[in-house]
Structure formats: structure tokens, C-alpha cells
Length: 128
Image 1 (tube, rainbow, N blue to C red):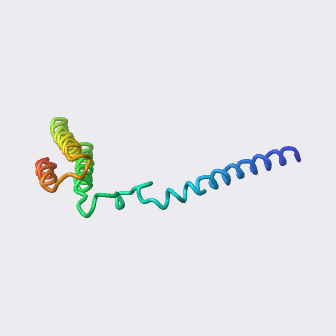
Image 2: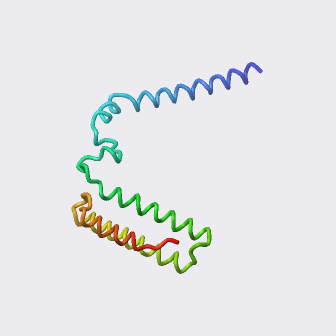
Image 3: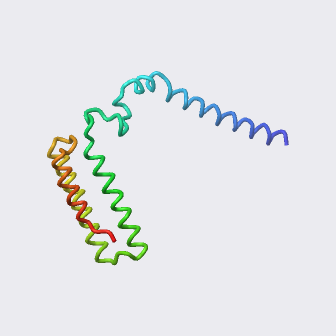
């Protein structure tokens, strides 16, 4: 019984020590240097160069909402297979155009005019 207890206690301490070492190395000087630079782990709100006009994010949110709505309508029976295919084809076309504009602009944000054109296409998708 003592051997089992000592073995389990030893394993527990080894695991605990490994976690402490792993946490210590990730929060060491390299982690502090990366935390100080804002471009190390960018989030949507802190992406350098986007400024106050993140058109691509607005469009992506609308595309995702529409895709989810189309899927919900199809599962509930509001859309048949043909309507589902045509709606999803429009969504794919909009996504391809968005990517084309993104790369044409040198991987920068899409312009307001490009966003307006894509949103017009997005509004043309009919959902019951």
C-alpha cells in the first residue's frame, strides 16, 4: 500500500513539476518580449493598418450570418435542394470576389466601393 501511495505521489509531483516548467518557459523573457509588441498576437481589434474602416470584417460577418441562415432554412424545410444550391453558389461567388479584391489591393482591406458592390450581391440572396 505504501509503495502504491509513494508511486502515485511521485508521479503527481513529476507532472506538477513539468507543468510548472512549461509555464515558466512560456512566460519567460521571450514571452514578455512578444507581449510587448502589438503585432505578435494580433486580434481583430488590434490589427495594424486597418484603421477605422474594416470593410472586410463587416462583409465576413454578413456572409457568415447568411450562410448560417441558409443552412437553418434548409434544415427546417423552408428551402428545397435547388434553392439551397443557388443560394450557396451566390455566397461562394461573393467570397471569391472578396478574395480577388483583397489580393488586388495588395492584401489590404477592400475599399468602400468594393464592399458596397459585394453587399448588393449579398442582398440579392433570397431567404424565405
